Length: 403
Ligand code: RM4
Ligand code: MN
Ligand code: MN
Image (cartoon, rainbow, N blue to C red; front, top):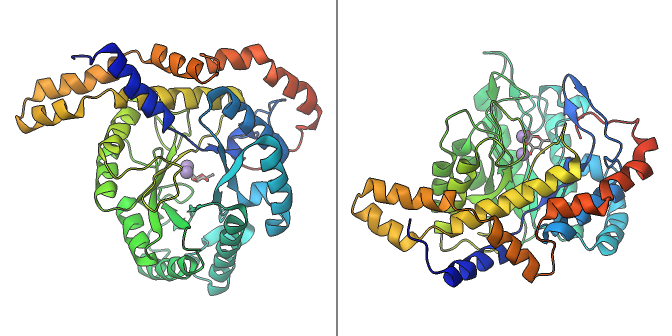
């Protein structure tokens, strides 16, 4: 690959990192595990205050994570009554509430589904929870209400897929009506789990249809872990950009299923390819900008074995590096190669950006902003995790079901 002159690269890199922000999930700081068990960490956060403290530490180290995604039931169990405390935490830690995630998968009544439950009363309760979540999002000034459903069935013939489509369309349309003009409803899809025969929003086609049916402010949310092996996610991203339906991402990595491993740990090239599609789009705004077509970048991971804050910092740094690599692609030159069908030249240019070691550029960008050049090393030097382990260690006996 022909590298542009040093300073041109530096400029482009700096701009790319300036515009790159990614939202971190509150649940990434809590004790989590698998269905086989949980390994409790002394430093894990168990209150909203502790999650804010951890999130603020990640932002202090990376300068790229000013917002924290919240799960209503885990973080705001009192609903609107908890928003006052939340606002104080925002002030105290210099962090803002990000996307609001309704929780339609834990209560006992959702055994046979939430918005697709055959029982109209349960569908109504689920919808009420979505309304409550929208109200919370209005109170916190959150643009995005991010909806993931556990709905589906385990056995062929046991449910009417057609009925459930109709119920879902109706619920989402009604939920959409409750949005403020600057809010969005993000619809996440997932091919299986917890349901293993059919999932009511199984892929991006179903999510796209539902977003269109719901209304103008509905978009699709792509969780990178929610795809079958070998699925071409960047092509899905290209289609969603083309149709104006891409709302945001839940980034994570996977080897087999919805593994929720740290971004780029298994297949960094895939994230690079997704970032390339995003950077090709001229209408793409900075991820946090409040415009309808802004694409929200969020992390959705649970760190079962790694230290929570450390894993989150590692994730953000990896995301920055991959974003930077994608920014190094000379897209004008690439377009010429594509037009000429010069396969190898196009591929080498593309791969060349991926193989460029951008870590020195990222370090220089950080230093220019008064940040430590190596956030992971800075975390270790700070002793933050050890301090939290000492302070929180005695309180980690209560482990909630998922996060
Ligand atoms: C789901 C999905 C949702 C997340 C829950 C906990 O698989 O990824 O986004 O909130 O897990
Ligand atoms: Mn997700
Ligand atoms: Mn998931």
